[in-house]
Image (cartoon, rainbow, N blue to C red; front, side):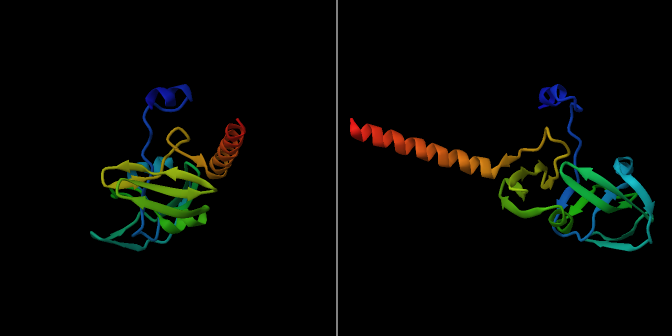
Length: 161
């Protein structure tokens, strides 16, 4: 993967995207990732309730593009250990479904499958095209259809012999 990334002119190591978090209703950017945000601006301070209790954020929000997903108004939390993206942001960016199996998660996005990156127990958004494993579903279906037509022709020819 590192060699593939180098050929494409990308960093050798993929930067980890935010964790896809079905329990969150806002996007959070960890303070150490503040430099990845654009259009940083003031926002009213609010308490954010989580499983480990409540925290106050820095009073700032920013925007970021992660792979094909545009995150707007991500709340900067200085002491957050991880950045997270909520499902609503995914749906607002054209994601139409999430397929979860015991060992993978795949988002359905613009007639494509986008495989999330497994990181321990979490799944993260991929951050660049080199880590995107997108397959055009329509093209795949068309290829299958063409294969079936070719096989049908072969059967007809074989039966004529």
